[in-house]
Image 1 (cartoon, rainbow, N blue to C red):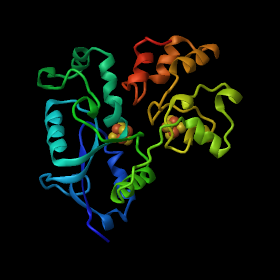
Image 2: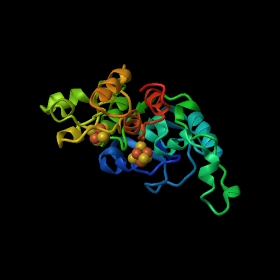
Image 3: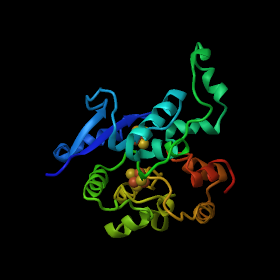
Length: 252
Ligand code: SF4
Ligand code: SF4
């Protein structure tokens, strides 16, 4: 085995569900040296590294500073999960009035948050994005091995419908009139929900070239109201550029 890949795993505003996938890769330690990962017990100060994996969105100024520091110390910066790639559930607050949310706390003056909770790419240059809520451990492993062998990582950008077809699933929209975001959502989960006769609600975010207008008009044709359509897109990827257009009422 040649030189190990020096990696750091970092958390911003998130639930830890994506970085927990590193526990599913026991052979990782044969080819990676971890320089920082709080959840895994590496609490030392981050040093320079080959690859920084960043989970979570930027919700407070301290996170924005931390992120700039990570960017400076890493050759490659990879965002992992819906929080880091499109803002996650915490970005749902971007569609409301921040002050009214703070009022539920007894001392709102102690709460210091940025006006919006935003994806990492709005703050620093991002080299790769791994999608999902949470990400898929197999995709993570294949990504790390590609980097290790100086290959271009394969990150699917085609719609979830492709995975349904590969599994031989019956389309839940066509057969059962169940609203499903599969035609506009990125592959990566193996079409888990349609395989058990449920519609996809979008963990992997928009796929490349997602034709949102067309799917929204299809849903309307199925009898869904504008509010019902918006609700479908108001998920952990709601703040992604294309889903946001539906949530904000620009489409539908
Ligand atoms: S993307 Fe989902 S699983 Fe990953 S940290 Fe965010 S909320 Fe958790
Ligand atoms: S909601 Fe969609 S992306 Fe998420 S697990 Fe189900 S099928 Fe996959």
